Image 1 (cartoon, rainbow, N blue to C red):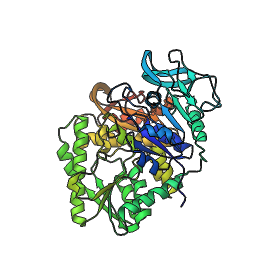
Image 2: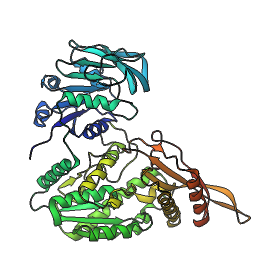
Image 3: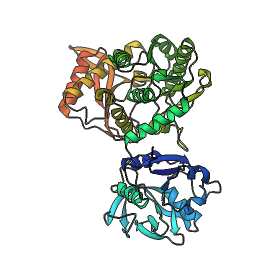
Image 4: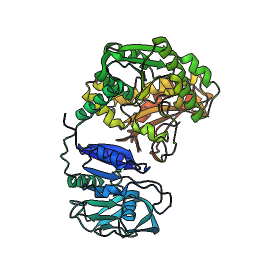
Length: 513
């Protein structure tokens, strides 16, 4: 099979590195991320048609600043540096980088002075996302400035003869109004045909799984019942068939009717060995009195490992352990190069030694949520399953602020079911990308039936997003909010107040814990 054209992205620890990969894929060009220190041999082995250098938190003038092999500029293929990547390009090729007199952060108006190549088709001025303290003062020989801002004289530079480019702004983020045109123009300079599809990705992933597992290897999949693990199950099943065993751990924190649905789908849709482990008692016992969210997540992660270890021992020797980790999980857990920890995910951090498996398989680790859904559709999964609401591994345990009790989890489970039902009745399921309720832990005075109450406050959380890395709070119609609030207060015991979360990500995360 012919290998797809490929763009290699060198990761310097930028928080948007995988967004670059995502934008390239949206142009139907395959991309892979390598660490910035990848050897020239490793880069050549990828046979890329172009290279993109990501942004990063370091300062290029630091003695220990991350640097790639300068040989990439002599490969005879186009190279695009973004933010730190542009500064590094200038520094390595003899230009000058200096501390900016005025830092630029956020949406900045950029004037496109030369629209002959990289900026082709763009407006004369366009809002773009800046995030830098240092900037290029003097372009290297062969380069010339092609864009500027009020405070940054070289907001983009080009050497069209060698196909080398740099932009100080971030074209990969949605805040850059015409950023995708920059990515598209660069791919045109690379001669990309734009013929890569999710079907091609599925074929590549299936080949990789087969190569890893071999002709006789067996896999134990940690199945949460959510979109990610379901798509991972389908992908691995396509690769190795009945050598896949799925274990579903019911920790007692699932949504209303969800455990029953998981059992229904994965005993009838997939002809694989399916095991349901009822571990609610263990999880509740170990989480008793624990209020700190990070502690909750880590206990849940530890208990998952305990359960899978026990199930693996009962099943006999299995060779590989698999899970549905996706890239937003990796970034938030600080596992990406240079990323800081936002919150721990029980399915991120490598393969625990105590499981006794040979290797960890994470076929979705480099994908964003919408890409996972597209892959699920490609693999033939039911539409309703592929487009289910995202649900974190720890489940409702992280939607209860403070310590956990069955009563508190029950409040969230029932109120969440009401919210989901009303969103569906209002025809909003395709417009709102994630929605759920949170038991805030706040208690307040109320009046119900002419009597004083002192009960819990439930928060409604609903967001719109295309990648789950950033999100905006959803503008739900007030009449829908009113009906949801009325039903929760009337139908859910011990709740006398409902509030609406109107915070975007950032600064907030989508989940409350």
